Length: 361
Image 1 (spheres, helix red, strand yellow):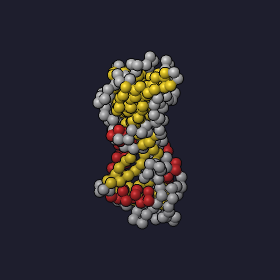
Image 2 (cartoon, rainbow, N blue to C red):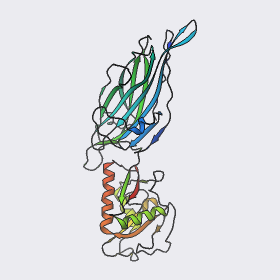
Image 3 (tube, helix red, strand yellow):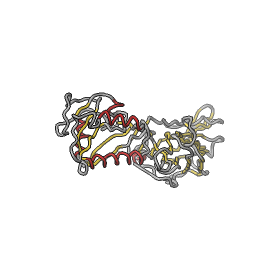
Image 4 (cartoon, rainbow, N blue to C red):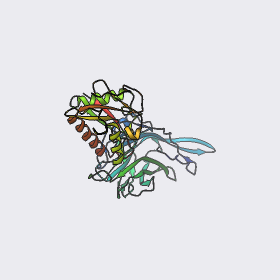
């Protein structure tokens, strides 16, 4: 949750104020690490002070502020100038690069009176939000002194280089110093970013960083994987989780528990002579064995569907607990497994991270 410090009351009869910011939120997108980047329109279109997690690698917020300059004479305050501006904060990472960035921009919208000529400069920081070092590695940042004027943003950028294995969490921040020519002391503005998680734990891939708060999706084609899609969509329709972000699946990386999930859902021919083994077919289980919702770790009983070539005493059944099994084309089943692993790797999905399963034509 981002925070913003109040603009302080300036001594010697000068003072300043600001608008408030609100809440936090989530949606979808992507970016690469390279200089000042355009902020996604889903943030600039809604300058409401609400952090938006755009994707696994992007987060942004645009907050409206008002700087009000007053002078008090004989105890009576008089407004002598104002500046309405947007504070635009953008954090972006890469799933395959160990550098992540957080940039901030000040965009003046209206400047009146003694607020004209206001200057701003900034200093960035990064704070570890857990005990694991690495995410807040070498910091390279720049926000030189700039004069605020209409039609031109004042900009600053900072880059953190992750070191170590992780996972490690870091939170960027900016402290801006604004100086009004007519006021003796500066105005301080602070903003914090969303947490970033970095790791070097994904197979042979390079280190990278993500917003794990964003729930990724593995998206399968009904056209290329018709039998697999039919089974999983039927399993989801029967009440099993994984279709909506509100009821996701969670990755399981423990290979022993994965094997237990597979053995529970689709036991070997020797231990389950009742389970058919049609040629060129695999026993497909949902939720997947690589999830905590799998047959062993998730618990519950088996269910199946009329076309699945499996007979169960208790099938069909419904509800969020349990698992579904079906005989599906072996090539489709294995292709689906490869796609799932690719999604895990590309999105740096670690143990217990949520994800969803969706289909398209």
